Length: 287
Image (cartoon, rainbow, N blue to C red; front, side):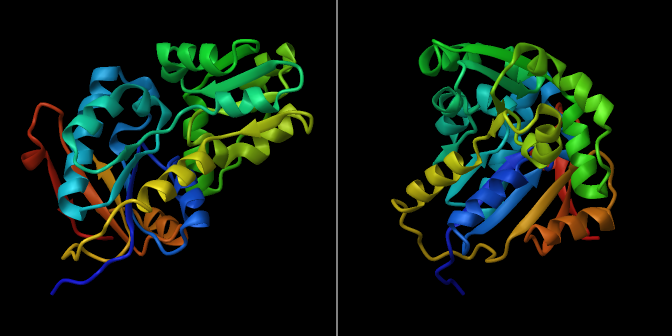
């Protein structure tokens, strides 16, 4: 039996970082239904080449579009957004929203025209970032720091409450301190999870900015123009977690996603990229 469902947004990331986007969306749209896809088997995207990221994200996007019928898909990963958005927008019939490093916001907030970009090594090297710098902050110095290590720190902090070591953070962030930046863009959706400890290392005089609220505003605007038809799709928020082995999702992950508003967590077996999506991807029993 069909029924009118609430607005439905799918959010895809390489791991838990996209949950920072989920939180921003829920602040603006508390009644929204969400499907969260965590490509844990492919995390972190920042250490993969662009073609591999495109293959993984496009397969997962098609799968969630067919199975869950969302109104909007959010690619909640800066690394993926820089390479896969044109392809997804051409292939999917629903709007696809990406995440852009908040360089424009940082340029507006900086007082000394020296801003930092903290992202994955892949993101800071993209020509896309050069274009953002030239368009929105041509009068600012942009200091770039790339770190995949911070992605792992953020994952461990969220799921295991393992606090990052201060000396390791100081080493990663040293260039910002030496350069005298007064505003830092958190250019990976994982990094706002670590904002308190990053801020403690950089000091109170440094402003941290991210893209969460901008993405949420864009989603809110798009949903206002979408007419939702009756649907037989499930009316419950779910989290999907990719795995390379046929194992159930751990209890810790299930509890963690439940705390984030996802009562159902499913494991998605995501095999070698040479296999077809139909053969490589299937649901496993819920833990």
